[in-house]
Image (tube, rainbow, N blue to C red; front, top):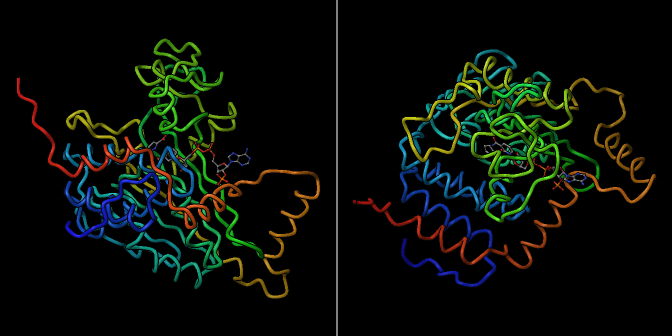
Length: 350
Ligand SMILES: NC(=O)C1=CN([C@@H]2O[C@H](COP(=O)(O)OP(=O)(O)OC[C@H]3O[C@@H](n4cnc5c(N)ncnc54)[C@H](OP(=O)(O)O)[C@@H]3O)[C@@H](O)[C@H]2O)C=CC1
Ligand SMILES: O=C([O-])C1=[NH+]CCC1
């Protein structure tokens, strides 16, 4: 693209970041709409401080597109299957456009029926999940979403990775400020953070994972090469990881994390699995009940009255505000590597 500002400083505006990431994705086979959606998601995560799912993921998106594993031009098919249920076949495309295609129908059903579920199959999710629920809470709805990925997590006691890192994201409106939301992997650590630690030569906290023999390890490289992550919270996180698999594979008609086979596509990083989203309208039939958002606020106030606590989503909004004021800080080497992805891949000849 010509005429775009060449950003060489250490801070980029959100819009410039989205525009450049979109260029990179289009240059690698994404349609205009898919490029815009992925670029916005990636830049939003970077802006909000979710570094493991921001710019860091661009190399994975591009390498997956180049491997032919994902269709960057897929047009999702939305199926209106029941009063409170929407299914989407993402047609081997990214999850985010599938989500966008169903958004209006899901919201309409949630408002009509009080609750609606969205089940997406045949889809690739490599991003931060909170962005999929936040927009519903901004419109007064409660949203809960789960996504499975690739088998990199063992059931404690087993040496066979079965689960993905399977995040859960929840967002709810509150009476004051932006939605209360949380979003984290059900593994002891996101796989992206293990990769970041390996790059930086950092050891991991005890309990993060096991090596190829099933022995506990704090070495990220041992986890990445034949080892696996553990779920967080022993049997509790393990059961949640299993729940996510059931909701994202059995329910949606898609693949379990352990069924993902991208061996024919070297360079693929985006698991082809599924995602489920549940949206609730808290005003449905509420009648004389206390206003929902005020009840949420009451809980938050009670928690705060006990001491200087840190609640989920408390760092996200200040990070976003700082980015709006100062731009998003970028690492120059990382940004240069992303810009280089606009050029066609080099064919290595012997
Ligand atoms: N697409 C996929 O398949 C996958 C995506 N991911 C994504 O990776 C991202 C990071 O996941 P993960 O590393 O597990 O998340 P973290 O362990 O970093 O936890 C993040 C959440 O916990 C909150 N939080 C963090 N520290 C505290 C604290 N001390 N007290 C209270 N709340 C706290 C954060 O709030 P705040 O909002 O303020 O930061 C945020 O809501 C997520 O966005 C997730 O969706 C992970 C796995 C797979
Ligand atoms: O960090 C992670 O665990 C993952 N992010 C996308 C797929 C898995």
